Image 1: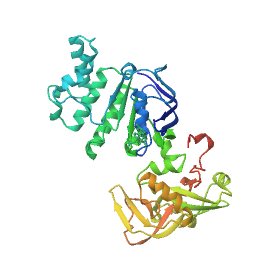
Image 2: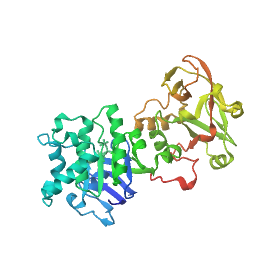
Image 3: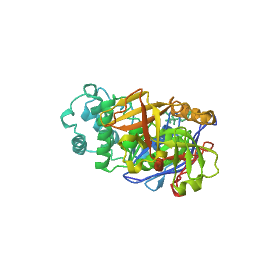
Image 4: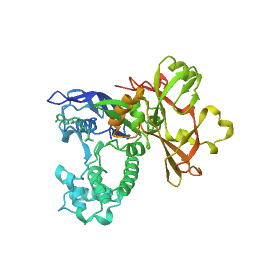
Length: 395
Ligand code: ATP
């Protein structure tokens, strides 16, 4: 296994378009790194540069301590697992897994047999070895594709949206399976997806890309709790973070529904900034009747009419219609377009405990926890509530 270091990587296509701009990411030996971002952010291009399928315009690609910019894909000893599995339909599972070993022409028949059987054992494919790919489920085919990567003893696995062909249930199962196998084998892995849930549940760390720039590279919890900018805050989390115009006055922040008190340390940082955008995740709200009275102050509760309630068994989402004021309409419209979301300007999404009795159409008292609120500069998108050490922003 090997670490992968991407140092100031740039990809400029022939037409002058820069798909990847000065990206530096270190993937540790044995780590599972996710590259995530909306369509066109450059994640596949970056993966293809690691494998050697795309030339690197500038920067250094270092694998296992060795610069590989000029090395052909076959000399990098990496295993790419594609979206469509790329299995040979006329070959059995056994022969599909054995294929890269036969191609290398250096392994004895006995050696091949041992490696294939070991891989099949790890992947729980032993009883399917004589079947053809056409007679396997999507999940089993995925495992055969991984088997081919395992027997090669590649220095790293690279996945490009491997689960996007599968239905939601199987996708969930395969996600767990990939995570389990990856950890059991301790193989360095780079995994590309556009799905933030997949990114957050699978990755040791997640690199969020936007328009060819790295936005933030961090563990899932840090991305969620300390997003460096508006884009990461809106992209990570489902339902997404709510964004509201916020006017800071001393240690108070005026929001459309309520005025809240913020910690002095935060207030100090954002004084005199004019209009900001407050970021409040759905779970920072609660049905006020369920909150400990000691935590409730007049300033942190407000009344609003709920127009839809989605009951999910373990929690509920309440939707509160709301019209963004014109001062922040432009910023939110731009973010909506990029996140492919239509709801940032029109409603607040509030997560309620399953015990809440708030019903649709009712006027309800809602609690908000201001200590967990983020404040963003609408012009730059920067999160002003983070300590300087928390920032990794590139653009
Ligand atoms: P998706 O999830 O849609 O595959 P992605 O994030 O993987 O998107 P890339 O495939 O890496 O995006 O493409 C990044 C950008 O580079 C896109 O805007 C794409 O149009 C552009 N691009 C890709 N190949 C070329 C090329 N050969 N010439 C010019 N531009 C290209």
